[in-house]
Amino acid sequence: METLSKGQRLPLANLVPDGVLQIGVAAQGLALDVACFGLDAAGKLSDERYMTFFNQPRTPCGGVEARAGSAGDTAEFAMQLARLPAGIDRLVVTASIDGGGVMSQLQAGHVRVLAGGRELARFAFAGLDFAQEKAVMLAEIYRKDGGWRCMAVGQGFNGGLDALVRHFGGEVDQAAPAPASAVMQAKINLEKRVEREAPQLVSLVKQAGVSLQKVGLSEHRAKVCLCLDISGSMGRLYKEGLVQRFAERILALGCKFDDDGEIDVFLFGKNVHHPAPMALSNCNTYVGQAIQRHPLEGDTRYGAAMQAIRAFYFPDAAGGERTRRVAAELPVYVMFVTDGGTSDQATTEKQLRWASNEPIFWQFMGIGKGRKSKSKFLAAFADSDFPFLEKLDELQGRLVDNANYFSVSSPDEHSDAELYDLLMTEYPGWLKLARGSGLLR
Image 1 (cartoon, rainbow, N blue to C red):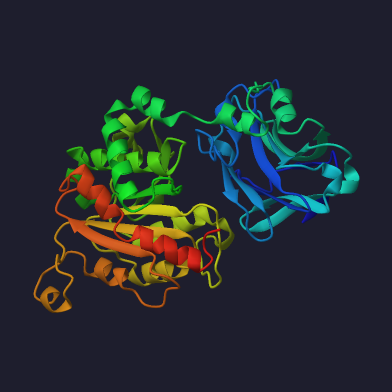
Image 2 (cartoon, rainbow, N blue to C red; image 1 turned 90 degrees about the horizontal axis):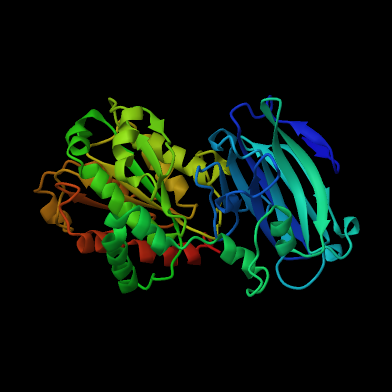
């Protein structure tokens, strides 16, 4: 690990050749709001969607995502630099005071660069470095000579978050109180976006809201992930547009759980693929284009897909064994769709057990013939295409019951109302268990 001083630079090309890294921030003595500004070559926030913070947690391209901190950090940004458009020339990580106080009251803090679970560099700061400042630029990731570099900054601003927004060329609503003004400036009016960009989702979003209201989750916030089987046997379902329509129903649920208008997507067969998120702007043809880029494959491996998903949301364990609980502000709801069994059953069971120590819920849906009766006696006389998924639903050795399973004869078997009710069968109960077990803050 390298210790950086103010103004010192660190080339990232050799250290992080794939451009996948994390920036962790910690502070003691003051409550800080952390944000990341994606700036153009002129150093301006030319696209407000590239201001990443708690209320707008991801850039449209998925290149920067705000997450709850782990391993001693109070906040974190997960970065995939290769996803950033050419117009984003630099990323500036900032912190501003939440409430009263000035930066000189800060006891200690740090910003650090990590890749693959390994800390590469750290920049420490403390109240002695500041005076009456209420905000500070901590670090900058920028393009240089065809690669990326990191620089420790440590520049303060007396005006707080509003001063930062103005410095980067953004506009601040003077009628709104700070720092809420910057939040309102960056917040997306999702309802209008749905009507404008994906009108076919309007009724779906409303219906999802009805089902959430039934279980007391109208104001609930969560990340949503759709995991799709791309084994060869799924071909007809993709060809007939059934998977596309189902994906739109999950995107609508995501619009109720989050305000960024997109969901994460993973595809799995023999391999696991992680395409760009499904968003309002690309949802009309999303599934067809995804399958064109990642054609159907032989084999089906649940465990490999689960490992990739866990590594994406909770990178500190890299999808491996986790024996201690990890907490986050937002849970992850995974919609896992398959039409057959898996060739890595032992791995899948391990993944589900390890994931029970994380705030992630797995909703499995099998497309085929399943046992409809919950009675073990009656079930013994019924055939099922998904005996292993049924086993996972009752798997022993987990911290909490973190999964549910149901089967359908076709993705469109249920009405929208019935589907959303099904998706909320066990999730509310898991939320209570997760909170009680310390998985959710």
